[in-house]
Length: 212
Ligand code: 3PG
Image 1 (spheres, rainbow, N blue to C red):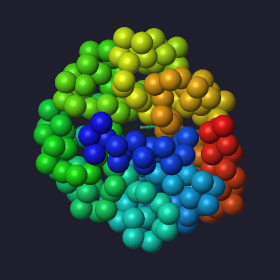
Image 2: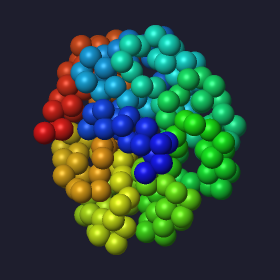
Image 3: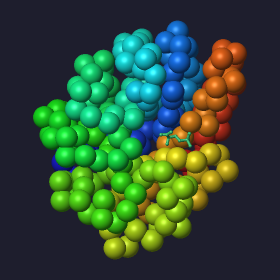
């Protein structure tokens, strides 16, 4: 395994769940990340879907001890560069383009590229990728679908994301080709808006116990 894949895998193995965050108000980023880390979820994906995202990544990277800030929903090279500049330690994309593969090759920060079919996985393997995001997990066929890829595409590991919650996370985490799952359920909008950080820590701690 390449040093870059190895680094990505170590980050993804920090906890069974990677929170996927959509930050509307940058002021919530640090307390939210602290609440997640307090519950055991250290690798945190902040999606570039809001104007606050890059500033949120920078704040979490600089101010939250124990957090490993990553960027999600990266769609092109410019976003990749901006996310790295903001301090992202890993980059996540919902799918894969040649532009993303090329920019990722120019950086030490690892890319977790999205794939949803055997052909997409094979294409990424040809580019040297061993760890991928399976997206959108539930909608693309769920745990049964991903399990069926484990034998023909042995050696590839996945972080499934999309439609995953406490109730179905274990279906994925028990598969041999799953390293962790991603999901937004640990940071519901109502709790973030209320500033209920204790509530978020409780959800994170509950998610962390999925490990065993
Ligand atoms: C996403 O990119 O939105 C993630 O896959 C999170 O999906 P979820 O909101 O269904 O957990």
